[in-house]
Length: 305
Image 1 (cartoon, rainbow, N blue to C red):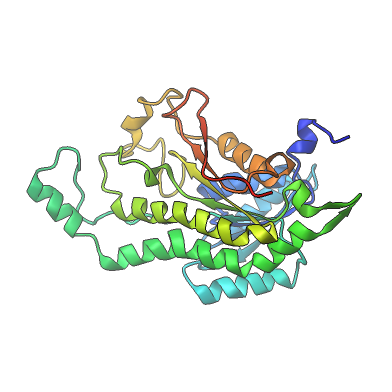
Image 2: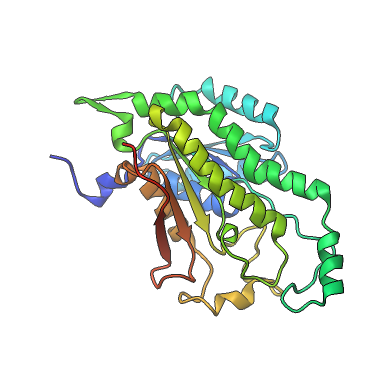
């Protein structure tokens, strides 16, 4: 008889994960959640990011549960760098249980304005100041990187999904072989006074990419899932700092706050564990504007398990 205990259903102990953008913000929250619960996490970040310090912190967190971390530098805007990353990890691991494709950037127009109150001339000046190179960079990291990362790690993910666990069970029966892609609630609304057009557009593209990849990978039982976080403290969004451009929005949501690590880690543990094994195509909206619980789940398709 299968166990219905939370410790068993949501267990990721002994699983291997890759987290891009793992040294700060959402990625760090996710890495902490996985390591604290006994997973081995490869923290992937830019060479200039505090990878060594993050790995040391994570290894301290995982000391009692058997969780661990290892750091790797990679610029995910480069297809070649992604290929090298996958090759490096393939030399260390025969299987990959979880890919968290999370790294992201935001490039606001150099000339800023309040888009809700600006005159036509002010709005045009602000939006016209956007650089084409910023749009290109935004899509390279926020959308295209997810595509190439999923492909580069597909063999390892499929190996995890099809690995024999004994008792006629395979990895797919416990949710192994999951890709979780970070999008944003900005892909679905325009509720700020800041021009996030390039960022929001890239995230809307990411939402559709999740569906396209899920349709292609499902026959290998590699699940593709998306999370759409709301306002989360990060280098991109310094919640709590004076002059925060989004601070006025927090009072408009029931929770009256930005997201916490527990909100993000809880969603990822669900999607990557036995608890989420039948979820093949789903969008998690982690926000505090649509429900008192702060978590809204929207199905985007029919599970093909």
